[in-house]
Length: 85
Image 1: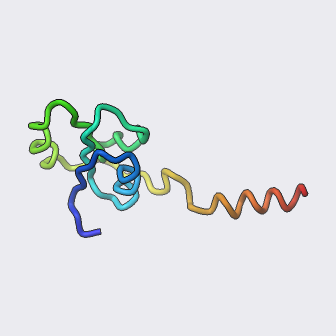
Image 2 (image 1 turned 180 degrees about the vertical axis):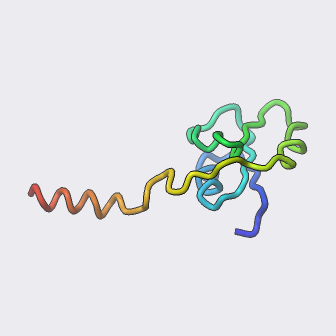
């Protein structure tokens, strides 16, 4: 919560970093969460580790609220099933 930036090689934390409005540097050549790359919220750094220093200086662009939904998918699915079962 108090981090300015997260540096990771994990797939999962990239998404959480975006949700928490934290810049993320991913030490991989690809990501499952390509939408986090938009606006510079997540930057892939694989072979050029020297890019980390410059990436830390950059300010991310536009943040899209609820890009992963509102968090109520399970209750919506149950509601639909209850109507049809």
